[in-house]
Length: 277
Image (cartoon, rainbow, N blue to C red):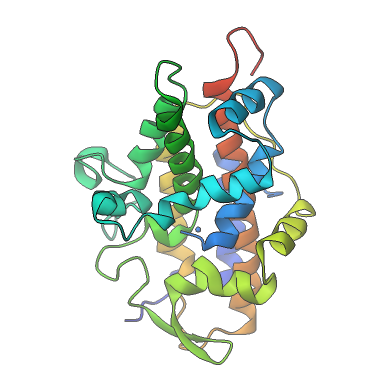
């Protein structure tokens, strides 16, 4: 399956940065594979306020890079288990062609999608009456799905399964557009999550917002979907250097943005009462 790009890549990259700025995110700043999810969690950890960090440490049992690696990839490790089959739709949200804005009634009536999952698990993480295990799982889902939502094709179209049916060739190998954004580009440019985190640490920082609200997630969904509609699809069978370079720039932006937004959610729901957000 192929689809024409609506705008030249370089032109839309500028527009995409403008969109991010319009939602309160600096232009200085997928699912992703494990490397991307690790980076989202670790970069978010570095942006947590002391009270939120302490509370998250109690929930997870430890608070370090390894804790983030284990938690943020947990939702992928359980995907093949029968008892978790119901959770597959939580990793993405589909919006119809020609529609620019997410609608819960139309797109996620059963609340089984990435957009509503972020809202649900943020509430569960902040529920101090819930069990430690319930809150641990809530953080794992929150970290993972926040990362997923920022991979543009996880807010794509149902008819090509978020780019999984869009065939391309990259680095001499046949693959699909979804895999290119999920992990192939990261593997080519960084290799492993440790290198990716180091590279992103030098990428212009995105300051986490001061207070998270549910409505922001709808905006984030629209933001990713806008990238899908106007920029992500390429007209070429073979990924060229220009598309690769601009995709790498966008990919870094999306991961660092996801990390800052995850930190904003955690700071909002886990800060002790009275501590400044």
